[in-house]
Image (cartoon, rainbow, N blue to C red):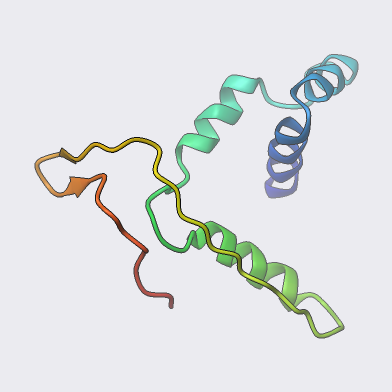
Length: 101
């Protein structure tokens, strides 16, 4: 269920301790934290606009009865200065993302 998945990821993000408490209290109704990490790993974390976020915004705004204002904030940061080649492309160079559909 997408709603359970969204709730689990959000709760664990806000408070891992609260997540463990709810999971214990409701007899493991929520997935194990390892499962959440597996879900996180399937998210595309490449530079640019995150399609997951844009889909979530579209879903939230399509069900609203009122006009929705949205602000996109952009930031850049260097985690480490290092360029790698993975036999397909270089990683680590400056990249502000690609196009939006």
